[in-house]
Image (cartoon, rainbow, N blue to C red; front, side, top):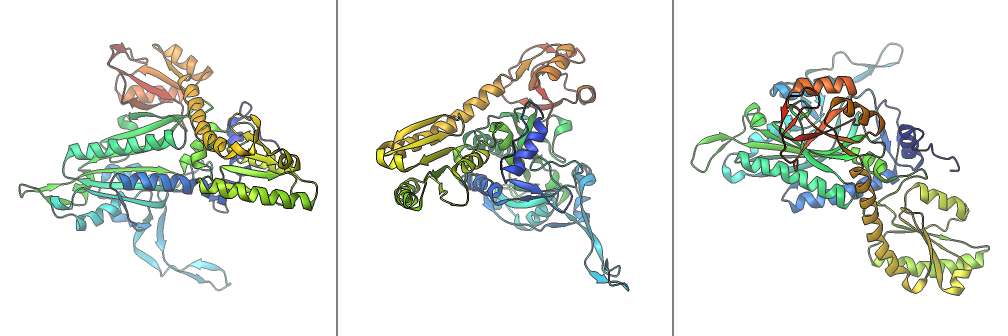
Length: 490
């Protein structure tokens, strides 16, 4: 526990990797590129899941579950979709093992599948195969389904949470009568993601659309939320796609319209993944460890007793027992750490590393004086406080810490949006300051690719609230109507 973290300023990437492991969020596994999410990390993910799940249900969606394996032939039905995922698919070819002459386990070559199966990189194809059976008429629409699942995209360069070959996520898949309804749905879900990011993760995001080359494979439009990490790199935190009628046509999903004609439905899909865990770590944490917003912290308050003997511990146990009950009745999650196997100093460092929003220390003198020491994780400030007002103070601080983390991240992000008007400044800002660069772009994939190959910066999004203004493309000098956001990204 005593080992210090690498400082962010020294090596941000190393700091991140160390923090994820030391704070007990996740670790690498025996399978290359796949992680083990440890209980503390999973507890944070469960809180994210619970909030998102509630938000999906409040917007009329229902959960279902679809198969992990997808027949290869399904992929060939939507050409641009398969092209987008072809390079990262894991394929199941056999269904049995056997012992050879030497007693070694080998694949039984007689147990070859007639048709190979793909481990889902995303589920559009298998889900649309079901939708063909589920949708007959306009009365069956809209169909609003979400699934919580694992998916696999064969990645070679992996980083815990940010990019792993297998990850956990939710994927919404919806079918609508009209184009307008489907677009409205895709935008609505982008709004849900932004709301979750800002109000639960305390992470400010910019809402926008992706350029053609950055869109989801098979989508006509991709709506995204983009966040800014402390190292000046952007992170795509969630996407929502308007799929037009592409999948409906590929899987022949027609419905009888109100006029009695046959037409193809309009589709969307949208998802966020365990990547959000990486975003959460990188948005708020510091050189001492994790900093968690109260709304997503598995433990919101930790109480550490300070004592010299069993008798003192006994007295503290009684008083803290009452306090714990009272806090829990207010919906606050509390951990009372009265383990005798670790010293208080060790515990302080441990909960600081794990990002617990509030820490209370209480000793015999506090019992006499009716006081307690309260320490905030976000500002590292301490206060001595009367036990009479402790519970109300904690309730207030939960809200205050949540708001403070958002404001701090917002100020940081806003300080990293720079408007530039020529390519020299573009490169200069990118290499010295980083962050988002707001610049004019001529709208061509060619220019976008040239900028990317010479600077590694990509267009993160075309912001929804971008104002119309005459300008010239930062690279080609051609006319442009509004600015887009460039950045180096995860």
